[in-house]
Length: 332
Image (cartoon, rainbow, N blue to C red; front, side):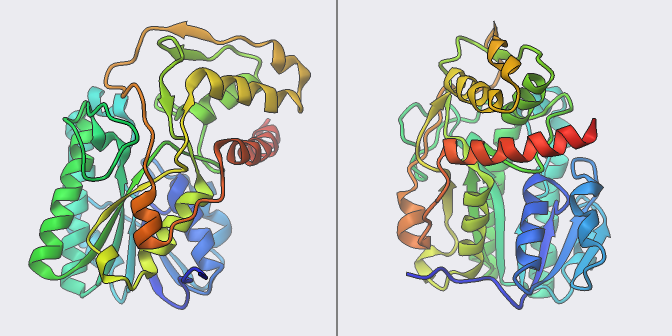
């Protein structure tokens, strides 16, 4: 079955200068859409979208989802919203729960209100695998969640509750995508809250030893960016009424331990620089708020959306490392 293509629409991408958002901007501009990017650059980077600014179908609105007026300005004439704006990172939310709450909950409600008032029907939003919390069963199935283990997880769960209420009360078509450890091009290796894959790649390229929290046996369903782009497009275009007002796992459906991830990464990078093969990891204490194991069932997304991820962890990491090698080497 051929996938529906998102084309010839006016799309708002919140957080459009961020890692996932900027990839979405590129993809849907290339498919003949008009794209509005709303970003306050607290997390997003101008260099992610600079090359798009000359495109007449691309508009950057520098604004904040915490301001309802900015959201109202951004949604004018929009047909689809891809809501990616958020303050990510479990450790960040533990250090500063108030800001995470303001951005991730109040900001989300502002987007929903603006969409309702403008008459935007379809909203696809970034949910999170952190919502599974202390639920131990594997694989993770959408209907079975536990108690959240961090303020960030609380905010992403509350998003799901608000999405349900707005769809029931106001007839909005809302779909949540629970991302599982997304990685790939444009995800930065620097900063205190950098994700593990880009952070480790950056350290290994400098021949520095990365720190693995715990014994390295924690596992993740690492998900390459291309799979996430596919899921967003399917959610934005589905005409299956049963698929709307649902939440879906977005992952590949395989798990990799942190030690396995490090060893594969080191092996792939060693093809570019043989000295990297000699770098060993440091093992530290477990990190507060971390879920021990994460593995998604993607059956619901397959059955209702037609989701068919093409990038395994190894295939995605191979492509990501090629991008990082070029990008980070050029920055030196």
